[in-house]
Length: 354
Image (cartoon, rainbow, N blue to C red; front, side, top):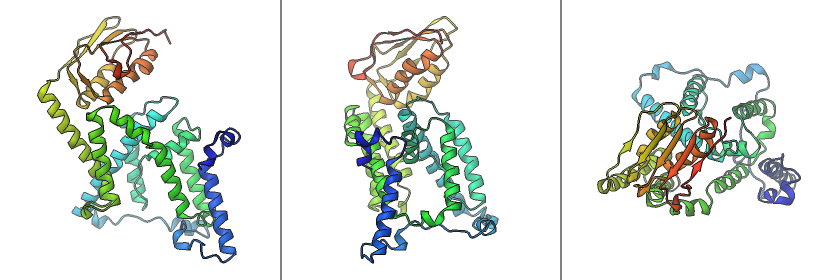
C-alpha cells in the first residue's frame, strides 16, 4: 500500500486501489506458503470466515427473526439505547470528517442521515444483522476511489452482497492480518502527526478535549483500564471530551461573558453580526442556523472586533459560509476584526450572481 502511493505507480494505475492489490498479494503469498508446507502459513482461524451457502434456500437460512419475548427486557433496552447513541455519535463524527475530506464540498444533512440510519438499523435487527453506522475508514476509501455521491455507498453495499453470495471461498482466503494492516495505514493517513500538531496550534480549548478523548478511548478499549466499559470507549471518550471542553468553556465564560447579537433582517438589508469576547462551541449551532437563514442577495458583516477567542469550529463555519455557501446565494460577506491567527481576511468577499 505504501509503494502504491508513490507517484510513479499512482499516476499509471490510479483507478486500482492499493488496498485491493495488498489483499491479493497477501492471499497469493499465504497460498504459496501453504503449498510448500511452511510453518509461516496462516491457519484458518486467522483467515476471514464467511458462511457459504450451496443454494439460495440455504442462504436465506442465515437470516434470523427476533425473539420478541425479550422486547421489554431491561438489559435489551439499555443495550439498544447504548448502541443507538454510539452508532449516532460515530455517524455524526464521520460526517464531520467526510465533509471536510470531500473535494466536492458537499454538506451532509445530518437529520436525514440519522433518520435513514435508524430505519436501516430497525430492518437489520429484524433479520439478525449487525448495527449500521457511517465509518470514516470506508468513507475515506470511497473518496479516495473517486466516489462523489451517495450512490458510491450504495454500490459499495451491493458489491459486498454480491461478493459474499458468489465468492465466499475466495474471501475466506484473505488473512485477517492484511485487513488489520489496511486499517492501520488508513487510520494513520487520517490522523498523522501533523493533525496532532495542528490541533495543538488551534489552542488549549481544542487540544485539551482532543487529547482527553483520545486517552480515554485508548485507555478503555486498548488497555482495558476500566473493564466494565471495555468496548464502549468511543462513547465514554466522547463524553469525557465534552466534559473537559465544557469545564474549559465555563472557566472562560466566568472571565468573559458571552452574548450573541442577532438583528431582524430582510432582503437587500445590511446585516451585522456581532461576536462577543468569547465565542465557544456552544454557540456553533445558533451561528450556523443564523448564517444558513441569511436571505439571497443580502450583505452581511461578521464583526469580531471585540472578540478575544473564537472556537475553531465556529471559525470553520464562518469560512465555509464565506467561501462556499455565500456564493451560492449571491451574498456579499465581510469579515471584520478577525486576527491573523484565525486565517480569515478582514476584507470583502464579493460574489457574482449564480
